[in-house]
Amino acid sequence: MLASCSQKATAPTASNTSAATPDTAVAAIGAAPAFKVPVEYFTLDNGLKVILSPDKTAPIVTVAAYYNIGFRIEPKDRTGFAHLFEHMMFQGSDNLGKMEFIQLVQKNGGILNGSTRFDFTNYFEIVPAHKLQTMLWAEADRMKGLNITQDNLTNQQGVVKNEVKVNVLNQPYGGFPWLDMPQYANKNWYNAHNFYGDLDDLDAATLEDVQSFFKTYYAPNNAALVVVGDFEPDQAKAWVKQYFSDIPSATIPEKVNLTEPPQEKEQRFTKDDKLANKPALAFAYHMPERNTPEYYAMGLLNQILLEGDDSRLYQALVQDKGYTGSVSGGINYLGNMFNYNGPMLWMGDLVYDKTVSADSILSVIDGEIEKLRQNGVSQEQLDLAMVKMRSSLYDQVSQMYGFGKADLLATFALFDNDPERINRLEEEFSKVTPALMQQTVEKYLRPTNRTILIINPQAQI
Image 1 (cartoon, rainbow, N blue to C red):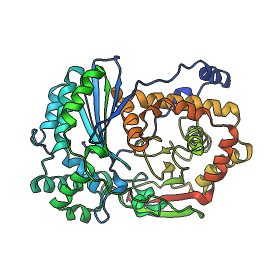
Image 2: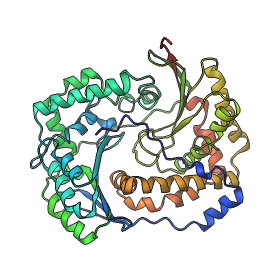
Image 3: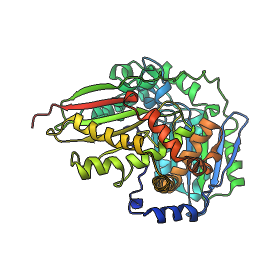
Image 4: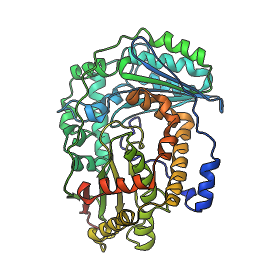
C-alpha cells in the first residue's frame, strides 16, 4: 500500500529493558557510547534542504524526499486532499510514465513507499548503493513535473475512497483512536478535521485543485532531501546539484495557525461501532509544546506509563486487574514523538470485556497518575526511563535500513532547520529532573486536560 497513513505507528517500545535493575540501568547510562550520526547539511539556491549521512554498514542507500505539507494544513472543504495527492505522485512524471517509478525501484532490487502524516508527506526508496544516481534523478523528475491528468485524478480518487472504506468504514474500530481522537480532543479545524477525507470532499477535488496544490507545496523550497547509507558525499552532492538545482522555487503560503485553546474541562464521548463486538476506550492528554523541557519530560513519562510490559498502565490494567489483554499508546500515533510540528496528544487505548465498566478502567489510570503526582518520580525510576528512551531512540534510528534515521534528519531540517538536532536528543532527555517530571504530571496529566473516547460495540454476535 503506497499510503501508510492508516497504520497506527507508535514509538518503538523497549521491552528488553524491563528486567533491568536500578544499578545496571545507571551503569548502562554511564557506560553508553556517545550517540553520533554523521550530518552534512546544505541548502540549494532554490531553497531545497539537503542532508547527507554516510554509513558504510551495508551497500545500500536510502533516498527520502519530504514535503512540508500534511493533513493539518490541507485546504478547507478538501479533507483528505494531502493524502489524495500522495497517491498522485506515483502516477507518472516528465520522463517516467504511470507506475514506472515503482517499477524502476523494484527492478533494481529496491523497496519504496510514501505516506501522509500530520505535518509532512514523504516518499522514500531503499536501493543498492550503486543505484543512488538513478534514484536522485527519478525523485528530481517528479519534483520537476508531475503528470497531472483528469484520468489519473479520477482513478486515484477511486483508490483513496476505497482505502477509506476498507481501512476505516468497514473495519471494526476503524480509525480508532488515531483518526477519531484528534477530531474529539481538538478545537482548531486544522487539528480536528477528518484527515483521511470525507468521501464528498474527495469527489469534489478538481484537476485545477491538484495542479495548484503541486505548484504550491511540492516546490524545492518546501522540501527536504535526505541521502543515508553507503555513498561518497562529494559525489552525492554533485548529483543532487545536477538534478535538483534547476527546479524553480515557489511562493509558499503563510503558515496556518494551529494553536489549540487550553483545555480546562474533561471531555467524554461515546461512538457507536456497528462492527465491534467489544467496547474500547482511548484517553488523550494535550502535550506540552514541542522541544520544551516539559516535552522531553513527557517523553520519559510515556516510557514509565505506557511503553513496554514493565510500564505502569500495562502492569495495572493487564497484569493486576486483568481488564484487558493489552494497552498501547504513545506520543503521535502517526509516527513518533519527534516527527511532528504542532499540537499533539499523548494517547493510550485498549479493548476490554463488556463486564468491565469504563469508569473502572479510568479509575486505574487515574490511580497510577495520582501515584506519580503524590510520590513523584525518583532518580532511580528516571534512570530506568532513560534507558528505555535510549533503546527506543536507537531502534528508531536503525529502523528499515536507515529510513528511521532519514525520517528524523528530514523532519528536523523541515521543522527546525537543524538536522544536527538528532545528535542532541539524548542530551535534552538527560536534562530532565525528578522535579520537572512531577511538575509535568501536575500541569499536563490532569483530568481537566483529558479527552475520553469510548467505543460502544453494536455487532450482533
